[in-house]
Length: 123
Image (cartoon, one colour):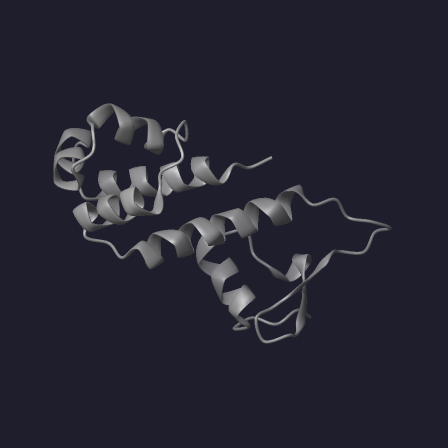
Protein backbone atom coordinates (compact mmCIF):
# COMPACT_ATOMS: atom_id res chain seq x y z
CA UNK A 1 0.00 0.00 0.00
CA UNK A 2 1.30 3.43 -0.94
CA UNK A 3 1.21 6.02 1.82
CA UNK A 4 0.29 9.58 0.97
CA UNK A 5 2.87 10.97 3.39
CA UNK A 6 5.63 9.04 1.59
CA UNK A 7 4.61 10.34 -1.83
CA UNK A 8 4.35 13.87 -0.46
CA UNK A 9 7.79 13.60 1.13
CA UNK A 10 9.28 12.31 -2.12
CA UNK A 11 7.81 15.21 -4.11
CA UNK A 12 9.06 17.78 -1.60
CA UNK A 13 12.54 16.24 -1.55
CA UNK A 14 12.71 16.16 -5.36
CA UNK A 15 11.72 19.83 -5.56
CA UNK A 16 14.33 20.82 -2.98
CA UNK A 17 17.09 18.82 -4.63
CA UNK A 18 16.24 20.17 -8.10
CA UNK A 19 16.74 23.64 -6.65
CA UNK A 20 20.09 22.59 -5.21
CA UNK A 21 19.01 23.57 -1.70
CA UNK A 22 19.80 21.94 1.61
CA UNK A 23 17.39 20.83 4.30
CA UNK A 24 18.86 23.56 6.50
CA UNK A 25 18.09 26.30 3.95
CA UNK A 26 14.51 25.19 3.38
CA UNK A 27 13.79 24.52 7.04
CA UNK A 28 15.00 28.03 7.96
CA UNK A 29 12.92 29.64 5.20
CA UNK A 30 9.85 27.57 6.16
CA UNK A 31 10.42 28.23 9.88
CA UNK A 32 10.28 24.53 10.73
CA UNK A 33 12.93 22.46 12.46
CA UNK A 34 15.44 20.71 10.26
CA UNK A 35 14.66 17.36 11.91
CA UNK A 36 10.94 17.70 11.34
CA UNK A 37 11.38 18.67 7.69
CA UNK A 38 13.66 15.67 7.26
CA UNK A 39 11.00 13.39 8.75
CA UNK A 40 8.34 14.88 6.42
CA UNK A 41 10.58 14.29 3.39
CA UNK A 42 11.21 10.69 4.47
CA UNK A 43 7.47 10.08 4.90
CA UNK A 44 7.76 9.52 8.64
CA UNK A 45 5.62 12.50 9.68
CA UNK A 46 2.38 13.84 8.26
CA UNK A 47 2.61 17.57 7.82
CA UNK A 48 -0.34 19.84 8.56
CA UNK A 49 -1.76 21.98 5.78
CA UNK A 50 -0.17 25.05 7.41
CA UNK A 51 3.25 23.38 7.47
CA UNK A 52 2.89 22.22 3.85
CA UNK A 53 1.98 25.76 2.80
CA UNK A 54 5.04 27.08 4.61
CA UNK A 55 7.36 24.51 3.00
CA UNK A 56 5.91 25.20 -0.44
CA UNK A 57 6.35 28.94 0.06
CA UNK A 58 9.97 28.36 1.10
CA UNK A 59 10.46 26.30 -2.07
CA UNK A 60 8.71 28.93 -4.19
CA UNK A 61 6.21 26.40 -5.50
CA UNK A 62 2.41 26.63 -5.22
CA UNK A 63 0.91 24.04 -2.88
CA UNK A 64 -1.52 23.10 -5.66
CA UNK A 65 1.41 22.03 -7.89
CA UNK A 66 2.84 19.83 -5.14
CA UNK A 67 -0.55 18.25 -4.47
CA UNK A 68 -1.08 17.67 -8.20
CA UNK A 69 2.29 15.88 -8.46
CA UNK A 70 1.40 13.76 -5.42
CA UNK A 71 -2.04 13.01 -6.87
CA UNK A 72 -0.56 11.93 -10.21
CA UNK A 73 1.94 9.63 -8.50
CA UNK A 74 -0.78 8.19 -6.25
CA UNK A 75 -3.04 7.51 -9.26
CA UNK A 76 -0.20 5.73 -11.01
CA UNK A 77 0.64 3.67 -7.93
CA UNK A 78 -3.01 2.68 -7.49
CA UNK A 79 -3.32 1.60 -11.10
CA UNK A 80 -0.16 -0.50 -10.84
CA UNK A 81 -1.37 -2.20 -7.65
CA UNK A 82 -4.98 -2.82 -8.73
CA UNK A 83 -5.76 -6.45 -9.56
CA UNK A 84 -7.27 -7.22 -12.95
CA UNK A 85 -10.43 -9.32 -12.68
CA UNK A 86 -11.38 -11.90 -15.35
CA UNK A 87 -8.74 -10.61 -17.75
CA UNK A 88 -10.45 -7.27 -18.28
CA UNK A 89 -8.56 -4.11 -17.39
CA UNK A 90 -10.18 -1.98 -14.69
CA UNK A 91 -11.87 1.19 -15.82
CA UNK A 92 -11.70 4.56 -14.12
CA UNK A 93 -13.94 7.53 -14.56
CA UNK A 94 -12.29 10.68 -15.83
CA UNK A 95 -13.31 14.09 -14.59
CA UNK A 96 -15.45 14.59 -17.72
CA UNK A 97 -17.46 11.44 -16.91
CA UNK A 98 -16.03 9.20 -19.64
CA UNK A 99 -14.51 5.86 -18.70
CA UNK A 100 -10.90 5.02 -19.40
CA UNK A 101 -9.21 1.66 -19.23
CA UNK A 102 -6.12 1.31 -17.03
CA UNK A 103 -4.35 -0.16 -20.08
CA UNK A 104 -4.67 3.21 -21.81
CA UNK A 105 -2.84 5.07 -19.06
CA UNK A 106 0.92 5.23 -19.63
CA UNK A 107 3.26 4.60 -16.75
CA UNK A 108 4.73 8.08 -16.40
CA UNK A 109 3.52 10.89 -14.13
CA UNK A 110 3.44 13.35 -17.04
CA UNK A 111 1.24 11.25 -19.28
CA UNK A 112 -1.04 9.90 -16.56
CA UNK A 113 -2.18 13.47 -15.87
CA UNK A 114 -3.07 13.85 -19.56
CA UNK A 115 -4.94 10.54 -19.57
CA UNK A 116 -6.97 11.38 -16.48
CA UNK A 117 -7.77 14.84 -17.87
CA UNK A 118 -9.02 13.24 -21.06
CA UNK A 119 -6.23 14.35 -23.41
CA UNK A 120 -5.65 10.67 -24.22
CA UNK A 121 -8.49 8.30 -24.99
CA UNK A 122 -8.62 4.56 -24.46
CA UNK A 123 -8.60 2.53 -27.67
